[in-house]
Amino acid sequence: MTPNLIILYVADPDRSTAFYENLLGAAPVERSPAFAMFVFPGGIKLGLWSRTAVEPAVTGSSGAFEIDVPLANAAEVDTVFARLSAAGHTVLQEPTDMEFGRTFMLADPDQNRIRFYNPPV
Image 1: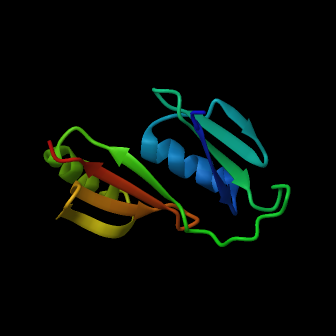
Image 2: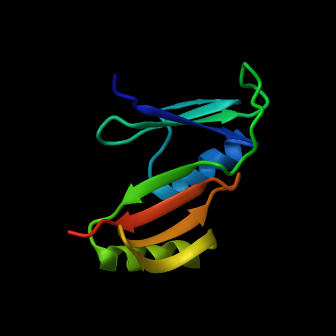
Image 3: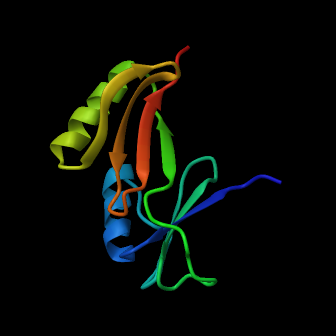
């Protein structure tokens, strides 16, 4: 078994789709009023599904999920942070060095976390 799809339950699929399109530089490969799907190199997929359309109904709260995006090196972490923070994204953590490498974190419109990081060599 190899999981390859992450689904986020979102309040506004159009808003979330626009957010991830802009953030990750990719267009969805599938789109409907209640759902959008992105496919990335390596085969992993990100689905954005309207919280009000999911069956069975979602009972958890938003913002409890984290997506991690690896970057090539620590300098790229700082460069990407400068670009995304200047674009007005919600910053949860500015660039910092942690035991797993240099990292920063943003929030999406539903307060899910997006961590950008460079693992130590």
